[in-house]
Length: 268
Ligand SMILES: *Cc1c(COP(=O)(O)O)cnc(C)c1O
Image 1 (tube, rainbow, N blue to C red):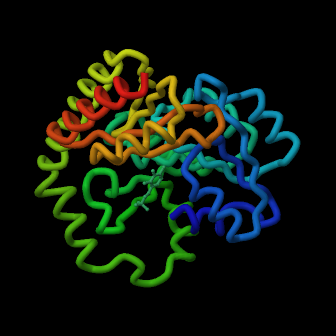
Image 2 (cartoon, helix red, strand yellow):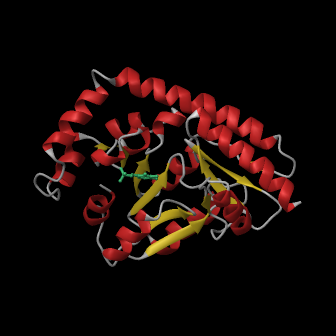
């Protein structure tokens, strides 16, 4: 869907705008199509830099913008008014709500009413990544145009059947899973922040950032020795010493917490 939007919206000679760091596929799709990328760094507090975005819009005249909402890999939802302010400049706005189930925040009403806004969702972050089912929500006129680009049979019939079953008959299972993740997210963030030297960042997603005084590569390697794999995101702008951890099942989270306690004691 990200690729279809990058093909369909605006001239290919016009740039694609998005804040960084964010989900890499926006940049990959723009590059693959030969579109110029306008990457605007987030502020130090990891929210949108509205002034810089407006300057970039004025200078580069992008026709398409992507906002990961919540943002991957930072975990936060951006200020709603900043997204709307950029859109007001005539930029077609894609609100990527891949982590919607964990944030509860949405641009759905805008996508249903406006021709300059679409919302993306996926089943991938609620345990069904293997299905390869994503959803674009838009006004019918917009969806019809995007649909012209869609290859026939791009989603398998079994995937469609399973997706429908999961979103209808078996939805309580997903809801229960989401509730477990939300409970565990709060517990994990609280207990991790109690470890001396660890700083935890707020999150609206099923993962969150944390930083320590030590090089992230070192913490990452020590955690692997403990049998825990997190993501080293410290190479990204504004994320010095930061790692990203996904919320797991309670036993997995306990294992991570114990590993972190040992690693922090060892490194100090
Ligand atoms: C995971 C993710 C997606 C979509 O993943 P699919 O598995 O291709 O549905 C889209 N946007 C963001 C920000 C994501 O993190």
